[in-house]
Image (cartoon, rainbow, N blue to C red; front, side, top):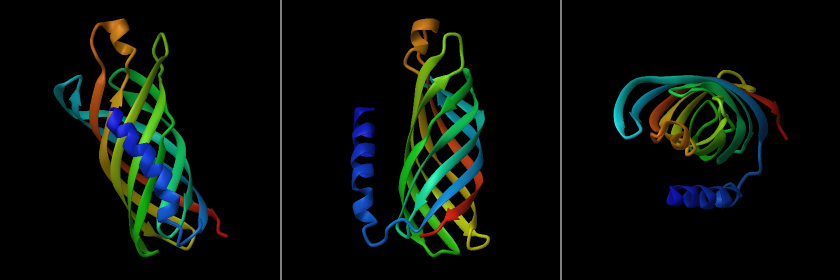
Length: 177
């Protein structure tokens, strides 16, 4: 866990240097529907639909990098949850069809009684298809581990989930410099 956090911090810190060839070319808003396919829950195999979420993001895009933050509301095996995903990544390909490699940290809360802190850490790939100069359709998949440390104090069992978030969304470039 500590190594993942250090990797995310270093990767995010050096991301602007990787995109030094181009400053942000646009500011974009995005919305996506994300079903999550479960692999493991609390160390045991738990294959199947692990939950789903609706996400709204704001993003800075350049030709070589992307940085985005947003809000995801959805369900999981412990009930409703609200997360704040922050992602950074590199962009490859052209403007009509492209690919993005992303890492994410998503702190948030489980809407249980009492409300519990949780965090998701993940990485994934996204394929983008330009529908027009301002609109993109995208699909993504990756791996994410979600932890809820305080869950153990209330139930006696640990809560950690490894899942495959699969997203389908649209992105609108609001402003281009």
